[in-house]
Image (tube, rainbow, N blue to C red; front, side):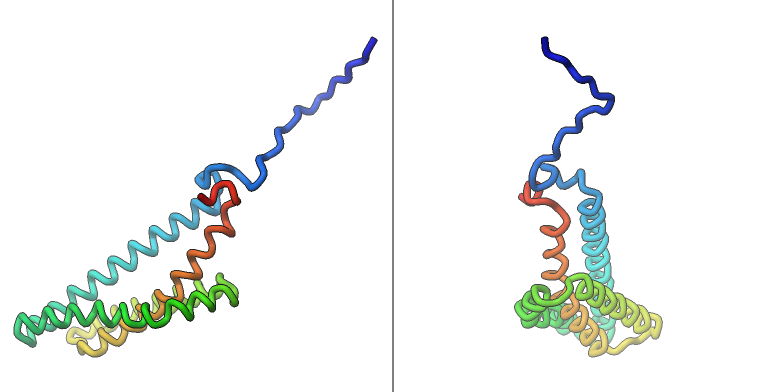
Length: 162
């Protein structure tokens, strides 16, 4: 005759190797996703407001053809630092603490937003000043992108990564 031993504790299933299959079940992933959505929304709002302000100033002071040129210069001032710094920023994100890189990039972006605000409150900001702040904003985005994208594999397990 065999004896059966009853236990009072229920047997917990072992978690699957590599973490859960759905990243949405991970709290840190949901926070990271919400943070990215907020950041992208803020960047788009700031870029739209900058373009609107540059267009209004350029339209008032220059012919319409030159006003369109200034809008293109805003995009160029944001894109060139992004293009030039993306590879060094990726190498920096691999070698340095990503959290510090993201934090510093967000602080620089916030400084750019304050700079845009102060120039807007000035009433008649110089176009060169707006373009210079746009270039710094593009440089900050160059460092933010690779460092923040490297957070995803650290937050979710191997199973949820795809």
